[in-house]
Each structure stands twice: as C-alpha cells, then as structure tokens.
Image: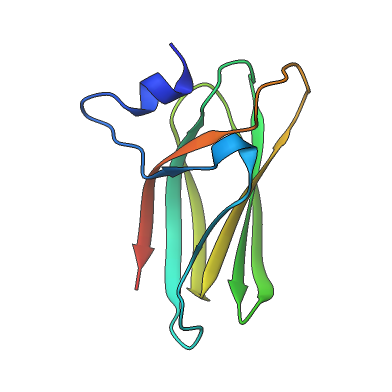
Amino acid sequence: MSGYQASFTSTIKCVAYNGRGNPLSIYLPNPSNTFGLHSFEAMPAYYDYDQLRVSVVGFRSNMPVFIKHHVLDRSRQIFELNFEQIDKVTFTTSPIITISTKPLTFALINLNFIL
C-alpha cells in the first residue's frame, strides 16, 4: 500500500499534499491577519522513501520567524510546531537518502491551527 492509499482510508482524509514534491504553502491573503499553527500530521506519499525530511517555515510579513525540521517515516506521525502569529507557512521536502526517482511528495493529514 502506498502512502496515498493509507492517507485516503475511510477514517482518514488528506488535507493537502505537495504535488510532484513542490513546496506547499498556506497563507492569509491579508498580511495584517495572522494565525497559529500548533501541530500537523503527515506521512510520505510513496513508500520508496523510508524517511523523508520536511522543513516547515513560518513567516510574518515575508520574514521567516519559525523553522522546524521533521522526519517522516512510513507511518502517520504528529509533529508539534507551536508557531504563533504567522501569516504564511511553507512545507518543503528533501530526501535523507536518495533511493528513488519518485517525487518527494507527502500527504498532510491534519492541521491544528487557530485563526
């Protein structure tokens, strides 16, 4: 079973994914408004990668104010962020060990945020 299949079961719905391994951004169109991102749950879309690094950057007024790096493995995992008063967040993937030609795609299963 691929990560996509596992993230689209009857009890789990994928919130978003970074198609073709491109960075995934979530932002508010009005930068005077902010949100908090407390945690997220994710898993790799392809099981060709035993581990996949996800770098999460929180921005305020186009300036990075929070940076955290997490490692996804083949199971669903919850990661704490505790980013406060941001107006944009970006998720970027990179391999830990390059063993596949498949894109560095992950499924974002859950976001815990406050507007």
